[in-house]
Image (tube, rainbow, N blue to C red; front, top):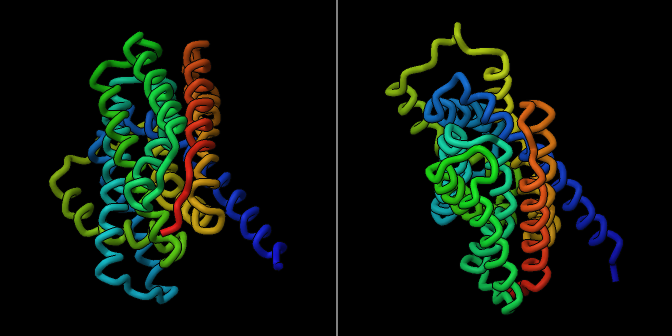
Length: 297
């Protein structure tokens, strides 16, 4: 039995997944900094256009094969989920809440990804899985309704929608990454979205760049290069190497990393309620993933 190479592959998947989560942890604080001076719609289009231009260059220079029509349909789903949907919805949400409040919602990303994996992969989680899922959602709902952190009902609804579309994009990308490769999935998704992003930019009023501060510029650069492209290179590669169910658990660390960044970079207060809810959500999602059962397709 050749266990060595398999173990190395699994370890590599976990390391790549961890790198991706660390990069994604800076996304909400960076977005919060960017929308302080940049309109959320313009930010969404600009970050996708910048990352898409880089992706197109990479695909052409490395002579990647053209995806099949079936793969293109799935890539459109990835683009709608993680290239347009999640960035736009979170940018809009962060106009109504602090980054620390939004970060709590990211604790539901593994659950959202698992839910779409059930639909895409034919998994049949056990009843305890759904018990933990309901508990995790209940903790988040209670936190939002109790007004924990600076937010509004509109911001909370936008973040819930963002988590849903992101989970869909993750699940679609995980399936595709086994055939196209990790970085190729996000690069093709960004390339497919590029023409629409460039056309849409013509109809959006750009910010007065003279009034845009350094933090907003830094936020735009981070979400364009790292959140939109580089993070997915590691993330989808990790999913392909180590398996969606196993590597996806690393997302449970994302709220903790992001809360630390929000406090350190944006000087946002991180109250005890935020920390407790984040830990509760992490525990619930960990329990749900522990009792989930993957079924081969």
